[in-house]
Image 1 (spheres, helix red, strand yellow):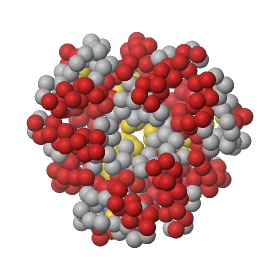
Image 2 (cartoon, chains in turn green, cyan, red):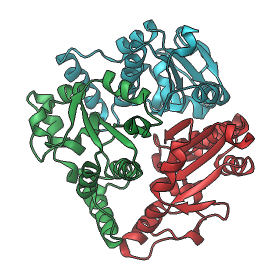
Image 3 (spheres, helix red, strand yellow):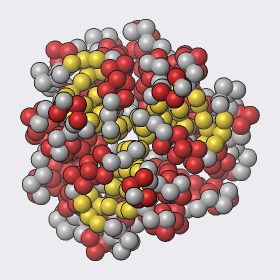
Length: 160
Length: 160
Length: 160
């Protein structure tokens, strides 16, 4: 019954940009720290946030995608001023200078606070990212119907 | 009365990127299939999703916009790795390989499931896209007040 | 009691793009004009919408950021077809031709209608944008917990 009264937040994490992932995980951990029930549904580029540092892709297109958009959460670059990696370096530097947690730590905090991380099954298939190339902490790989169900029960919904 | 009990989802579709439109229509069809009442409000670049394959624009700026951002839903390119059209080709290939519906089919499914498609009147005026250059299935062209009204009654709201 | 019955809209404004800011302020003013209680929470690139025309940044990275992403709301460029400033000029021209309010006027209308503008404290610190470089109309500078609280009470939530 206590459980039923908890407010709920559901977000689609579509983006794999460093800055947007940072916003997504900040909101998620903030909400979880406020005792909200938090669901993150990672799709498309957002899947990078759940990946291990591993090669993906089987077909030519899949391997091309893995080549240009491979790596794990540490490879994420900002949506602006990427400058071929300089932007990432610059932001990490600025965050460290202010003692702000970087993405891997922020994701770990989310996990520790009970935030649920779901991978979008269809994107995983299209992008040829198998479950075993994703971190163990992924709660489940689900379809869009699952997200709809979660969103219907939510007090706050966001698409990032 | 049955009608009043249906859950409602409203989204602003601001983006005209292939991948984001794919996410928008996937969520919309998924929600409609779950018996939700779904409203899509297309604005700015998102208007491409409702356009016929036709030239638009009257003023110099309008024609420039039509030149660089013309065409219909098939012209949409992904937000990442566009590579001057190669990204679009690559994603279509990957989707077909997994038997995933492409954008025009997904839009048709949305229409068949009763999803309502609204065009933002102000964007249409600014971008010089007249009603007759849009597909017949557009439910209506409306202002922001209309979206606000729909959103207020919704259980799920998204900006894509 | 009257106050409690008002519907509420909360949005995160993450983007500093001209077109997305335009969408954000259009929705905000539209909602406020419909008697909704509107909260805008500006973070990351979105902070530009609250800045004065002033240099920011102290560290090397901070100054680099100020250099490449400085200026006020008038410096915002569209997310597509920026063309080194031509896109901004083109859109302003198209908007004026249709008598559509430009960003600074739209922001003023939002303020006049009682829309609350919050700056994200953590982004301000990381990006080295002090409070005094922001416009006086900023309601308050707050943390993510504040946004979560507002969002929980809202009928409509958006991430732009």
